[in-house]
Image (tube, rainbow, N blue to C red; front, side, top):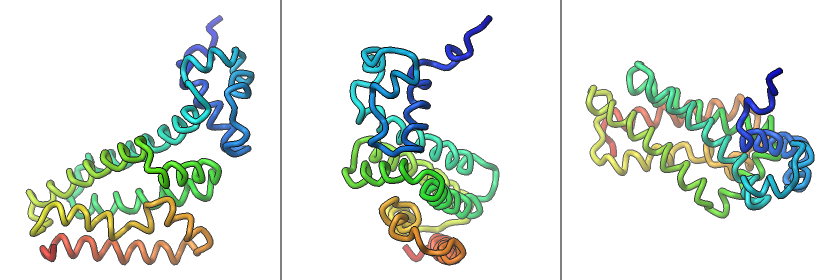
Length: 202
């Protein structure tokens, strides 16, 4: 009979265990020993894949960031007009952060920590998201939807305009704010972004 566990790569199996332990008990509950025990292996074997607890937890954050990038890439690659795509991208970007805050607070807190420290995985994530936004912006220019005066300033403006909705530290500060209020404010900022790009204000 086929062993189902081994159908999943060992590193992913360990990562999934760590993610569950983090979700239920926070970063303090995740140890190399606890992950090894749950996986039915020695802690020395876990170290072959993740040299430290910190790298194991960071890998959980990186996995979540990758899922966010996949979501954004799916919108960027869609056949919709560029202005519609940019609006949907901004909404998904913000919603995914808010969902993490409400559904997995322990992972969100770790995400905030690595963001505060400006760790490499966060910097790489920001660069990849910027490339996706850049793709939509350039498509909008080609199709006549957008007419920015300065491409780099326009790109920076998009991130600045929606900062409070996509930066985890800012999102955490708004944790007690009603979702309807946040949705209204995000919709307003999205309209500002689109009009700015369409009218060539920047």
